[in-house]
Length: 311
Image 1 (cartoon, rainbow, N blue to C red):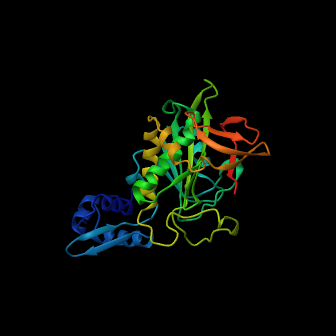
Image 2: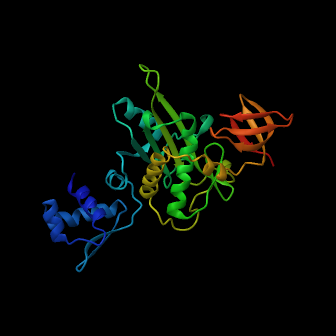
Image 3: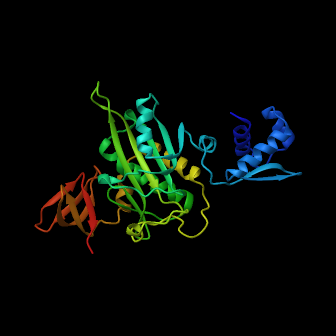
């Protein structure tokens, strides 16, 4: 690491501050180099306090970098300031030999995707994360999306206290609007014919930045912190999400998922293969399928398809 990265790494560990003399000794450079590197970090958005009594101290700063993410994550993490999609980056890294589990996080995406090929609005200020999970850690591929959705809910509520609900199968809502989108894709081992790994792509509308919400999304999406100052950093939320996703896979979680699914008991429209059918959402079964009753009385457990609320 260069002096600036080494300084940042030490300041992340030394929350109470550290003197310039000790920093220069640990890094092996002059105090002038320490001062210059601290100024460079400040230019990047880090808040560094310098005093005679306390030395150098890093205040909480929502700046993404390989150093800050590496300090937060318990698994390897790759940072891209800008990319088309973290899922594309993650799959490319798998093809290059990166071993799961690992994560990819971006400052913004220029081609973020949602379900059914939809685009996902991904400006600065959000959390755009893909987690690659080894196939051996996935007990049931059908359950991975629902498990990941509940894991994200747990992470958000633990760090923010904001209550979340789930729209089957993979959308997270607060105050009646979508705050998080999740997309999962399996990667097949062509030689052995099994699931070699899976990519869980997660987009969280954390806080607004300079780019305005498109008009067509204003009534459908919401930020976790739409107006007030955001008390958590993107690195904190992303790393907590990764930890929750990896830990939930060993749990029997379906009862908790079911209790958070707000469309149960509601009139819905089921859309599949371009056809729409009116129904009532009855339950989520033990395989995470949505059980619906159509107007003709027939009942079906959906494993795929788009479901919207009927008003």
